[in-house]
Amino acid sequence: MLTINGCRIIPIDGPVIEQGAIQIERTMLRAVRPSPVTEPGGELLDARGMTAIPGMGQMHGHFSGYMHTMDTGPINAQPHTLKAIQATTFARNALNAGITMWREVGAHAHIDLQLKKAINLGLVPGPRMQAAGRWLGHTGGHGTGLNEQVDGPEALRQAVREQVAAGADGIKLIASGGVMNATEDPFGMEYSEEEMRAAVDEAHRAGKWVAVHSHPAIVTRAAIRAGAQTIEHATEIPDDVIELLLKHRIFIVPTFAAYWKLSREGREIGLDPGLVELAHRVWDRKLEYFMRAAKAGVKFATGTDTGAPRVFHHELALELELMVQVGLTHEQTLRAATASCAELMGWSDTLGTLTPGKEADVVLLDGNPLEDISATRRVRHVFKAGKHYTPEPPVPPLPW
Image 1: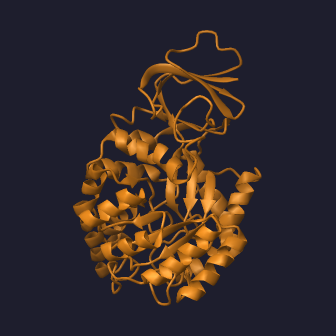
Image 2: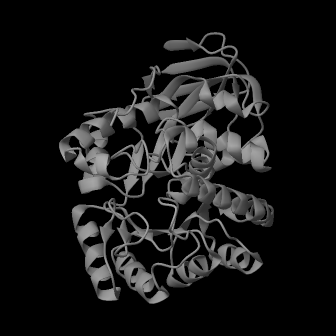
Image 3: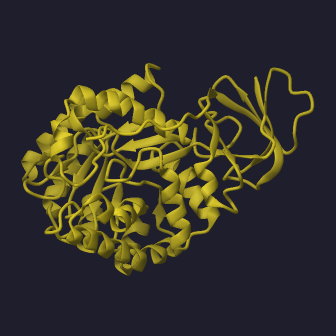
């Protein structure tokens, strides 16, 4: 048995323990104690001055690549074998940052499905994963150059079957425009409700979830009616959409980090000024709507859209900092990164809180994230299923 002794404990599902102990037996949390253990027996980790939180979650990630700009040419020129090797370093980077839950919402060449298998087999370190395989979008729409282009209800049914056959846990649909070039409209509809309904129906027949990329309210309404489980980006959320989200208990993943990075650092990396301005428009629209939805009780979880320019696979903490910046409390933000991610993934029975009997996913931070959310950047120890990882500096992406 391992005792993590003397730390502050934020269990998420109960009161904060200012100086307590966590005991791990094999892969499970055996006990969470309200005071330090004086005679622990077994292995001891002195964690005085640190704060323990549950393993965190990334609900909108892409392990299979990193884009230095919005030009898809360089990433498409990389051999898939090289992308796969790089993906293993990104997975290690993420785990070292305290991310033990990862939802992959689109990858090249099913790299995500094989990476998940490699992690589960213990070949490489990384978070627990659910993966969508290839992400699906219409011809010439958002994500062209990265996604699988599929048009029409029957073609979408076939594409969903192919992802399921490859081993996907869910399906990702790009149903609206986005922010990849200055001429596209993030608030335009790209998949019709009929197309989304066909894809969702096929996915649900196989017991798979569906995540829909949507900025405008018109697309989000259609996606909810079609039966989607999550709305990615979810920029426009008027009152009637809030009601639909609440009625169907649907999660949104706002991905603040991607639009903050593009709008603040886009010019520095040479992006088209029109594209930077487009990112500003999306960021401003998010601020207009998000807090109303959060105050109404809409479910939300953390995700950054990793792999976009300057959005690194280990930098979940930025999303948490931005959530606090836009108006959430520190407690709400930590819940979004832990218990809410476990709920979204269907793992609440085993993950998301520091509760005896659950899996031993524990992150030790330098500092108190209830006072300074940037403490989530200062990860000192990570436990995943009781296995101890000491974080190392992140490996940077390939330089092209």
